[in-house]
Image (cartoon, rainbow, N blue to C red):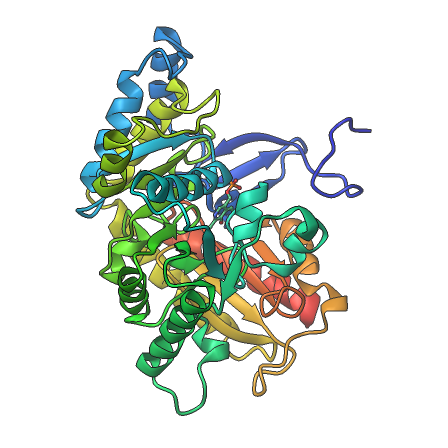
Length: 440
Ligand code: PLP
């Protein structure tokens, strides 16, 4: 009997009682390998002593100070560190408590920017179908995932969506990646013109699409073209790195691999590594200056923004992940994971595509490898694989609706950055077993 409204009502969940490295232990003593970092959260693994010490030190000093009265060393240090690590052009940080809050803040920041600079007519947000940007109303409206939006549609603010960059399914036969990128950039441009060349606030995209597509990076050159279209119409470019950022794809910021600098970046998840709920928005000096020279404030705020213990935890998490060797391990173990999955699953009749970057990998499942026909959604294959994997002591993050919110299944993997080769092989073995349990 539980008094918690859990995510799903019904199945009894095991009780997590301990965590160490890439392992979680439940109340029955069963051990699970955290192959998905929860939902791509546990960047440094469980029980990191240095992070826990940093949190304790902050708790002993002061646990909470409201940000309208005080700043703290922890928050200042974290902001300095993030700006120092970010590509040039992202000079300020706004701290929040999670990914959805980061996206909400980014949207309001973008809107207020145009009010400050005398373009208050701008009112449209454009994002992509098959994206996920969070579950609060504004973030949910921004996301393009049909099943998540459907029942809330009547209360969502108006948002517009264009195609994702999903080459494995959507690149036409005979089309080169460059043609495909150009086609998608033209689609964005057409949408901006349709809404009014001076009416659009921002374009929002995940550099590597996580929860909804299963670790899908864009084709080379796509984001450069997107940046050009945004610049042409004075539209702000927001990159949502809540899931793929903070080292997940092998660089601290995922967009570093795209050769473009967005105006606003959202981060969370791996930033706090699960030690504390924290998110952040990085913004360009152009936006900061507009606030400073205009109304003198960003009209936003929550009670817990810049929370000292969260900031202290994140500051230590980011300091550790930026030490020499950690990103090398993400890249090396990511390669091993990709190769291991390919060796074990390439020939499986229901495995369509294996993809991703760094320790962010996705396996897309199909009914037919040749035609790429998806599995019947009524089978709920993704849910069965999650259950089978848990039975085998593996946490992975399967999801349905990959193609259009209804059809398609994939499994997302996002283990901690400290994983070793033997543990990577365990993930491959257990996931292969779970897929065979369900699909034969
Ligand atoms: N943005 C992206 C890209 C995400 O993947 C998520 C969560 O999965 C969010 C935003 C929302 O973050 P949170 O669940 O911390 O609110």
